[in-house]
Image 1: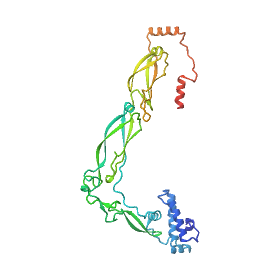
Image 2: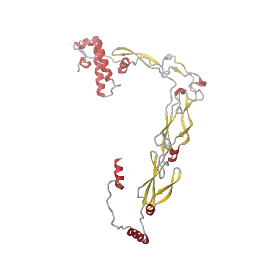
Image 3: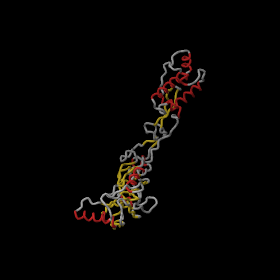
Image 4: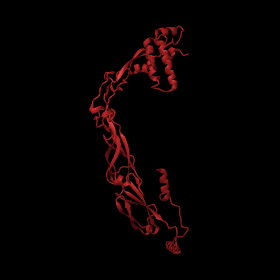
Length: 366
């Protein structure tokens, strides 16, 4: 069995004060509330048993003479009461406040891409805790106020004497009759059962600013749940969830869309109308436009949340190559190729500075 002096890290000539200081230092490090490791808890039991023996003059003398280590000790107080005495658990903490602030609430709403771009106002109905209209938050019938608890005399706690290894220890515990409040409600309100609040639906008006996106939150101060005892209400946070658009893709304040044009239109150029968030806009396709070429339309993108203004709309041109040709169409294309001096085998490898290779490379280096 381990030596009690070694367990506490003191010499055999250590005074009672030195033994107490050594135990307190180790107890602060090894108490289960500080370190839940089972091995550490076993060590805590060892130092406590050693301290119990060495702190009692009679048990210490018996141990020094080779007698029983424990001498039939009774750990009446328990570890928590010992640590209460060491760390201030026996001090007065005062009554719990009956009125407490309410909790915040989180609500998610869906908005379309159009609504996210220009902003929108919404009326939503939510279930929440509101002040009880019968007792006006007091918790008592007809607004009757709580009275002082006769058991704890308003302190919210009661004191108890507990026997421990360091002698009798005075500890404080929440008063059971009043629940630690220091006051009791003699005639609880029947509407709220003494809570001072009830569950009810309430309407909220939400202003969604232009430029929001999924994950943005709008704070409605004081519109959350009312606290216990009619305490101040918390806040409501409205989180935005942006729904997917049919053909527009968002990248922050920029919008992207794909536009398929015929091979002949891309070759000779044309102007087409597309539907944007602002309504119809013209897209000018220059002669010789290649597949994948972007056309930028300024100021037709998303609204900017903080800086104001609008981003851009980028139209990506997709040149549609015909898959089925009539004999006449095929003959015309052959004549066209002959006029341009082209042959069926004309092809060449492009350098890294453009074309599809650059797009593939860019996709892997983002």
